[in-house]
Image (tube, rainbow, N blue to C red):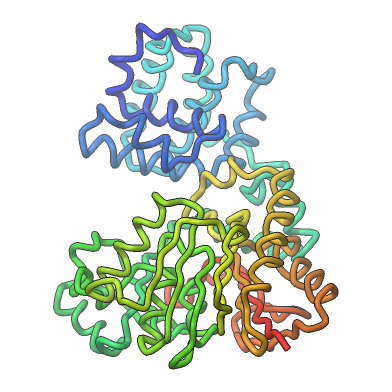
Length: 444
């Protein structure tokens, strides 16, 4: 960001400036997971929460706000002054969506623009915000603005799934995500855990589609969840919970979780069949595997002797023994979870999709060599793009006559010629699902 270095120490204690700094970092390619903690180091807890709320909200509505604000300008703001554009987007979000007093919003943002040494933009920002106050924020015109999705992504969704799906998905991705739990059914029923939540004053409902899932009325700290540290429950979206159910590990089987971090699906596999012969959890990142270990220890009490954890990419892994079943949750565009990670809207580019498709194909090809004859492989992504999903599997089946698809029955999903696509278009809390794709293959 083009700000005078001498101004930084004071500005970094201002929660609105921290939001500007973090959002500019995201636009430059840094994830919000990394940018927000780095930028908010000097904020107190209340200011940090405010900044997070402001950032997540503005990122969810970025495309619409960018479109609508651009119509209020006589000429575009230069790319070299991106921090001014970002500040105006954040200010517009706070003014239209947050509970801050309007006069305070105007004063704080105009004064911040001046403190950022951008005096030329102070009057402009004041005029824009006052026009918004008067109800003069124009409606979005572009496809990106109307859908609140990046232009390339909106067009691809419309081409692949149609206009109605584009409208529903765009709306869904503006919502705050539900906090969804996976009940460890080896330690108690879902009904029993719902009763524990009620006794703790936590409102929740059973998920309508996934038998292990519970949807909380409001997010809470995991420390407030009864039995969380004893492995009675984990935080995991309902769509992701389906992986263990669809792979359905059996007693005595040898399993591979090929891309296992952070371990949610690994622990779900262990919960679903603790009598398996063995389970190998791989990930290319040793740091991410620490989360896998922590999750297994929390759910199982300790890492079982039959579990192996290895820091190696699946495509570089060559074990002596083949596997009965493989869970292959490949790296993907994450376009099915933009409501949970709204920075993906800014980070993901159209050019990324082909690179990911090639990588997924390489991983799938190698994983297939690790599977026994008669074994099964569950291919999974949290993407809603056909390039990474059904087209990927269709291409694989064409080149592997020994691979046969096992049909999956998910009534709430979009049944494709290969696999099932779950689209993020369920608006009732008890039906909430992230975008996900599953295809189950058998080696004959």
